[in-house]
Amino acid sequence: MKVAFVTDSGTGIAPSKMMEKGIYSLPLQIECEGVSYDEYETIAYSTVIENLHAQKLMKTSLPKLGKIQDMFEEIKNQGYDAVFCVPICKGLSGTMDAMEMIANQVGLKFYGVDCYVTAVLQERMIEIAKEMYEANVTVEKIMERLERMAETCETVLLCDDLQHMKRGGRLTPMAATLGGLLKIKPVLHINKDTAGKVDVMDKVRTMSKAQDKVIEHLRNIGVNKDYTMVVAHVDVAKAAKEYAAKIESRIEGSKVKIIDLVSAVGIHTGLGCLAVQVFNENV
Image 1 (spheres, rainbow, N blue to C red):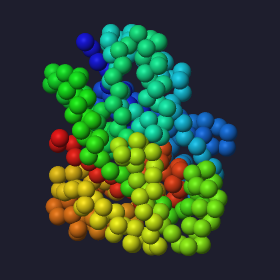
Image 2 (cartoon, helix red, strand yellow; image 1 turned 180 degrees about the horizontal axis):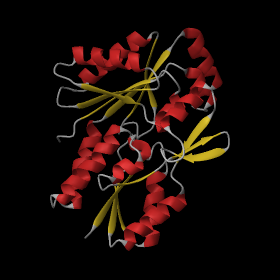
Image 3 (tube, rainbow, N blue to C red; image 1 turned 90 degrees about the vertical axis):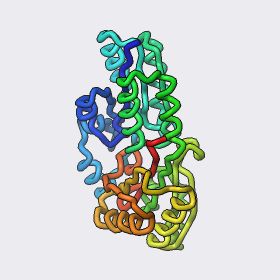
Image 4 (cartoon, one colour; image 1 turned 30 degrees about the vertical axis):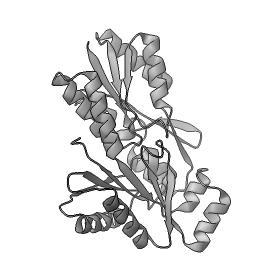
């Protein structure tokens, strides 16, 4: 059985860059002021940040169905029998369901694993899947490994701009107003237990206390130096560097990589958001 490996731009990597690794990737859509763009192809990350500064309302959605169909037909024509897909999680997007529907339509066997989040875990899961397949590991064993990886992952978001989430319909107006008045910093998280949906983990008064709360949580769930650790940010590189240093100082032997927060999340959290994602791929 010849298997093609497919993901989307929720990885934070341009589809053309993923193709260099032999992995197919579809661009998620970003809508701004009534115009729909393909992430990394017709809108750059820098433009997304500029739009956030200009307080332009943006939305994200799954890749165009026509693009999925064209890609899967191309995969079929190249002699593949199946697609192995790790898209942005089902809790945030309908991409997985669309991929499965179109795979069935074009006559490709479908395998899909929910990462329960997006970003770096999504990227590593599809890369590891391809590496294991090329090492003659069965698809069933690959899926079991990826599911174990997803279970180890925790992603925690610290949002500075509650008003932006209010504009995007992510908070009730009352909650956003109270948050501003009371100087509440919501600690949000997303993982398998939240079914890939963003949920409130805690509420604190300052960003420093929020970070302390996150690090305490990571230690409590057993995160150690064996985990991949990433701090992602929305145009606050200095704060991200300080946050990463704080994590490294409190989790012995840890090394934290700093990246831009993927648009699929950052568009909804707004500027100033800090996120940490941790997972263990050696499971």
